[in-house]
Length: 469
Image 1 (cartoon, rainbow, N blue to C red):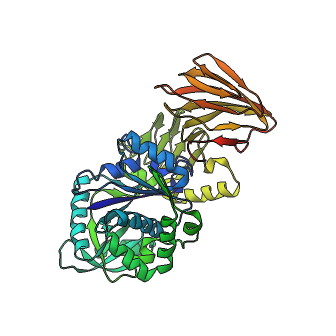
Image 2 (cartoon, rainbow, N blue to C red):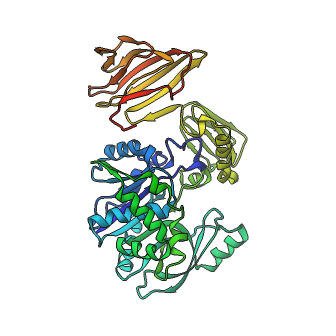
Image 3 (cartoon, one colour):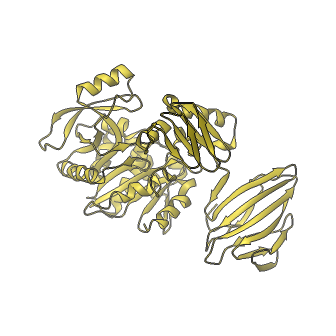
């Protein structure tokens, strides 16, 4: 059986301000009408003998990932939750350990969740070739046939043709080159972009990693053995997984193994690693501009404009990236879009909330948006999905007034339990246990007015919470 292993623990900082730590790139809808994560799973439908997917994701994203799978009709996935990021090698290892429990003979197709591939037929054909190489004892990676001299990717130099004409031995991995070196790679023809996609048998991956990184295997095995499991999630043990060394599959395994193989892939691949990369794959107007949302341009060439709400206008500029969100605007030279991560680094140093959350903050039960705030008050718009409920909680420093705008709310307030519908409201005093629940079939929307001496999100004492927070 072929088991898809989807690595969805990244942040995608180069796509800030759309990608944030609490709602990262792989969950965004950047092309068509589905997120990059769902698109990754969707393109596997043509493959034969496919077993249920395994997803390795950040603990804090578990409910967002689960909801996207539910919305896409994917109800058989196993979600492995990382308490902390440890790069791709430990992520692949824990997936192999879990897969090995189910089927020791399974082959693992390891894919990042945030890539774009336009030629699904060719991708599936090449993956099928890869399964034959894995059966013959190889550890396979897929090298993208370069379309131009790219300095933002690592490269794989292919070696001799293997017995099967579909693949090549790996001569060497090389780091991201400067432009003259990248041009020489393109002219040479033996160099492929390192895609970060792999195909291994679960048993051979574990055997090789025990040889090349035994301490990593031991930490991952203990993290899986001590994991907390329920019907939906496998939450890795934090102590053992946090003690695991962080390393990529390339460094930990592929550069050391004697059984590596690379298969060229020419299927319209992009890692969407920057705004320039997204501009490159988007539909463009006759002036070379890619536009998303409410955008008006005059005498603009070769630019990317993305509006999430407000009108975005440009006049007399070229080769720019301009991205508007409710709480931030990015303006960059398109050739410098890889350096957006430097702005993210500054935001982290300044402890700015824009690095982590959007104006709309997503929670497992729905979302909230701050509408207005000032000394001693804050107004929020709260959305609760059907069948969801907030934790039973209280606040030490603030009172709240809830007014229902849409839907029906079951409210616990102290010893009271009341049902509120549109235009009805309730007051929640300080130090009062309360809970909000949507028992209806429609989305619940309410306006919350907070008043108090301290309005931070950490002023929450939880007594019961179905989401384990």
